[in-house]
Length: 316
Image (cartoon, rainbow, N blue to C red):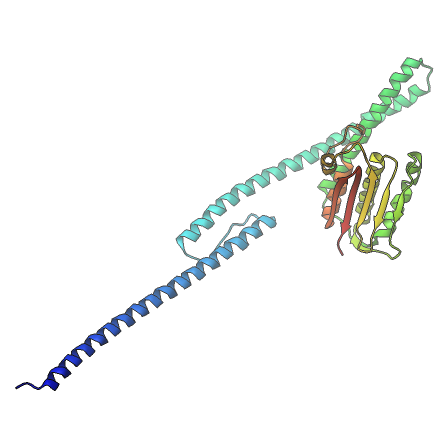
């Protein structure tokens, strides 16, 4: 006769053993899943690190004048393939930049040489015109000579501006020093006082009483102010306002009914002139922008309700 307790104990032991095996299997599955998750997290972390390296290195290559390529620490095939493809594009970019810089330098040198070579014959032409002015001539001849003189003066001005632009754009040497921007602006406004009087312009000037100090190249700053004021007088319809605040922001404003917002936006483009000023070379404001940006400043133009405004600012 079998004992019922013995049969129950056997069934219990069997169930317990079965439960233990299932528990062990479950624990193994959990450990396996945790291991996979951990491996994936490590993989993601490495991929993010590689992506960050590529991003930082790519930004550096674009902002700095260097021909080095991207190198990453990861050995992941996909990330290294991505870096290799970016490096291939960088090589093409470096080559395009080299060709552009070479062509740009050659163009600047050609402009400088041509401008220099034109000076001598232009000077001789103007000299002969001066001699002709002393001779007896008919009214028709005087009219023709006046037209020749006008065109010769315009060509001489263009040649001089081309020469100056090529020199300014080719030179990278500036000598910054501590200067009072208010004083420099006042001096430049005084230089154009007579011209303003000739055009019946009564400037409205508002400058801070205290000095505004900046580290700038004096010669470049004088050229910037001179070109902006000259442009403002040239396009003005009879007024000019110059304001400067304590932070050093200068705003030149004048009425220019003949302009449009599109024209105003292009005033800093090289050789751009509006139809109302055919004697202009279109280089004055280009030089002003070039020098301003090279000294870390900001210059921009705007046009609203018939008013042209040019804003200039140099940070501390």
